[in-house]
Amino acid sequence: MHTRTGAAIVLDTLESLGVETVFGYPGGAIMPLYDALYDHRIAHVLVRHEAAAVFAASGFARSTGRPGVCIATSGPGATNLITGIVDAMMDNVPLVALTGQVRSTVMGTDAFQEVDVAAITHQVTKRNIVVRSIEQIEPALRAAFRLAASDRPGPVLVDLPTDVLRAFEAEQRKPAATKSPECERPRATAQALDAAVEALQGAKRPLLIVGGGTRWSGATEIFRAFAAHIGAPVASTLHGLGCADPDDPAFLGMLGMHGWKRANHAVAKADVIFALGMRFDDRVTGDPTKFAPNAHTIVHADIDKAEFNKVVHAHVTLHGDLRETLAALDHRLARVTLPSFEEWRSAACAPQERLPRDDARHDHLSATDFLDALFAALPQDAIVATDVGQHQMWAAQRVRASHPQHFLTSGGLGSMGFGLPAAIGAQMAHPGRMVVAVVGDGGFQMSMAELATLRRHELPVKIILLDNRNLGMVRQWQELFYSGRYSATALPDNPEFTTIARAYGIEARLVDNANAIGPAIARMLESPGPMLMHCACYPHENVWPIIPSGKSVDDLMEALPA
Amino acid sequence: MRTVTANDGRILARIIHLAHRFGCSYTSVASEHIGAQYRMEFAFAGSGDALRRLDAQITKLLDDDRETME
Image (cartoon, rainbow over all chains, first blue to last red; front, side, top):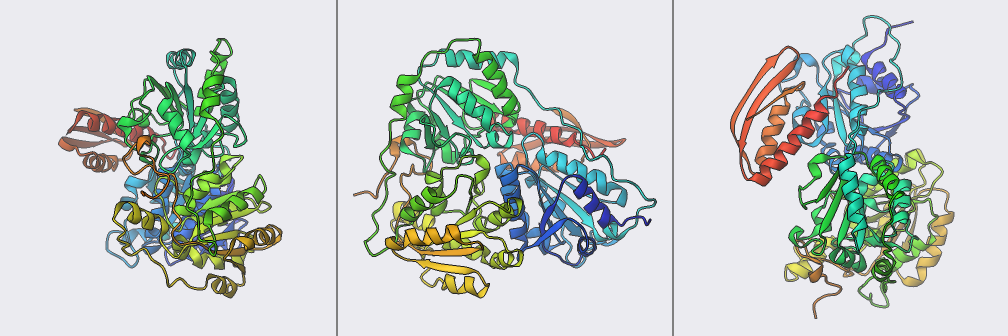
C-alpha cells in the first residue's frame, strides 16, 4: 500500500466525518484536491461560480442540520466565497469552506492568485485555519467540523497550500476514529429556570417568540410540546418559521417588519415574553426602545451568551442549548399550576383577514396570488428556498413549513443570488423531495448560470421566478420613503427567461395572467425534471404590512398613504 | 485591563477590529508568546454598553479558541 497525499487525506477525513457531497469550482492551487476527487466516492457538484458553491453548501446545511462543504481555489476563488461565508455567519449555518492556497514557500510574496484569505475571513468565521503541514490536515478538518456544528453554529475556513496537498505522508496511517468528542455545552442554571417558571406563573398575557436557534438545536418537537403545555400564543422570526406547527391555532405567524399584524400586536400587548433562540434583530424589533412596551418580564433563552442584553434587556437569561433548556423548563412546569391563558390566546389569535395587498390590474398577474396558490398546492414536505427581496417576504408571510428545514432563506445578510444555489444544495441532500426556489428577477440574474448545474446533475428543482421587472423591494422603499425617485431599480430590459432556460435544456413556462396559475402549478407538480416558471407579474405590487425601519408597530402601514 | 490566554495569537487583531466596530478604542495592548500560547493584556475605552458587548464577544472568541487541533 502507498502512503497518501495530503489531498487524499483531506477526502478520507471528510468521508470519515460523514461528508458525501461537496460543492465547488476548481482552479490552480486546489488542483491536487480535484485530482484526488476524480475517482473518490465523495460526490462533487460543479457549480458555475464559487458564490454558488458556498450558497449550495449552505442550502445543504440548512436543510439537513449537518455541515455543508464548499471548495474553491486560491485568490479569486477564495474571495468569491466571502459573501456566502458571511451569510452563514449571520444565519448560524454550519459550513466548512476549503480553499486552495499558493505554495507555502511563496506565501507572502504576492504570488499568482495569492490572497491572505485567512486575514480576510478572520472577522466573519468562527475560526479559520491555515494548514502548514500534511500532519495538520486531519486534525484541522476535525476541529473545523466540531467548531462549525458546535454551540452556535457557523462557518469555518480551512486554507490548504498546494504543496501540502501534494505532499505524501511519511508513513501510512489509518484515519482517526469517526466519532468526534462531544463538546461540553452550557446549561441554564436552576435559578434562572425557576425565575422563568415564576414569570409564567405570574403572567396574564405571555407570548412565545420562536427563533432560528430552535432549529439548530434540534428543538422543534420539544418546542411544540412546550408551547402546547403553556397554551400561550406563538410568534416566529423569519428563521423560526417551521418550528411552530403552522396549523396550530395558537400560531400567529411571522413577526417584525413584514410580519403579520396580529403577531406584532401580540408583542405590543404581551406582559411576559419568552424569546427562544432569537437575537432581537432590528427587522424584528424595529425601534428597540418601543419593543414590547407592556412586557414587564422578558425571558431570553440562547446558546450564545453574547446575545443577552445586546439589543433588548432581558430580565431572565437562560444560557444553554435550547433543547435542554426547554426540557428543563417543561420538567419544572409539570410540577406547577399555570393560570389559563385561553382568553388572551383567543383574543391574540383571532382569525386575521387576508394579508393586505395591492390589487393588480385585471390584465396583470399578481405575485401574491401566485404564491397563495403555490403554497396551497405544495406537498407538506416540500423544501422552499427563497432569494432576497419582496418575493422573500411574501413567501415568509405565506409559507406553511411543517419543519424549519423546509424553509431556507438568507435572513441576516440578505444575500441576493442565494435562492437557486441553496435549492441545489437542498436537492442534493434530499433527492426524493420537491425543492422549489422562489426567486425574483434581480436575484435570479445573479445566479442563473446555475441552470447549467441543474442540467448537469439532473436536479429537479422547480424555479418560481416572480419577475416584476424591478428590484422590487428597493423600488418599494423608493416609493414609500424616497419620494418616488426610482434610482436604478427598473429592469425593463430583462431577457426572455424562458428562452434562456430552454437554452440550458430546462423546461420553461410563462405565466402572465391569473387564469394560467392553476394549470402551471399542476404541470410543475407533475414535472419530473427541473423547471422554470417565469411569472410576469404586476410591477408595482408592494409587500404589506410594513413597519418602516426603526419604527414601531404604531407606525405599521398596510397600503400606500392616501 | 483584562488578561487572557489564547491558542491563536491572531485573536488580538480580531478583538481590536471588534472594538473599533463597537466604537471603542484601545488604551493599552500587549501580547507575549509563551510556550504554545499567547498571553494578552488589553484595555479599551468606550461607552459602557459598547464595552459590555465587547467583553461578551471576547469571551465568545476565547471559548471558540479552546477548540484545538488535538
